[in-house]
Amino acid sequence: MRTGGGTNHRFGLSSGVLIKDNHIAAAREQGVTSIAAIISQARRAAPHTMRIEVEVTSLEELLDALDGSPEIILLDNMSVDDMRRAVETIGGRAVVEASGGVTLENVRGIAEAGVDLISVGALTHSAPALDISLELAPLL
Image (tube, rainbow, N blue to C red; front, side, top):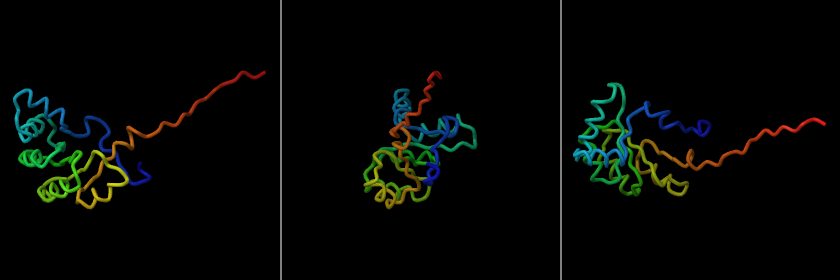
């Protein structure tokens, strides 16, 4: 990863606040209806130096999230056209990360949409394991 110029998204849950779709769903079950309010709650609970990242899957969710002023917005499984519109809408107010469905065939289009970062989960969750074993045999 590092040799190719990549970096880890984070090293552990304490490295940053990442509000994903399941967190948003859980908050809504508790009566918190807006993503901006969820971001606000997370900001109150996090140390003052920690950045807040929120995952959005539509332009509608993006508008809601922008009201909460997150430092990073993760565009998840969006079309390249929607990513382009999202980048324009964000207008530099947050770092923009693209994720979900990134392949060698579409990564150039995603980059050209203007995002700041592209995450590729397959680099970790789908990397083949190297079978290394040590077998000892008795000396005769």
